[in-house]
Length: 106
Image (cartoon, rainbow, N blue to C red):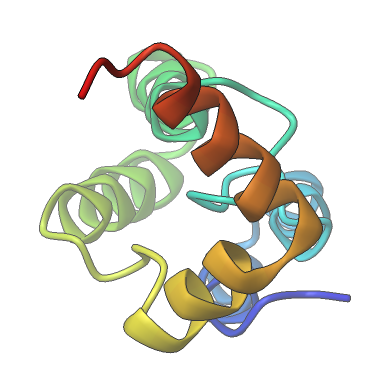
């Protein structure tokens, strides 16, 4: 299931013509809580930087990647409060909190 903010990012990427990245976004690959990556934002940032740096890409594509990257840095695609609460209540979120508290001393 695609998270709301992942869907927003996917729609923006599709509109820019970045279909492969959009498909990855739809799979929550770049989502703050649902991604398989430890730092999904860095993965997305690197993908966008690669598009910008590749002179084989059109100026339009490079500018689109630049604009999406700026929007990403501004937090437009960050998980929202509802998604955060849903993750925190999930089994994965609860397991993560237990691991964090395990090492905490009273």
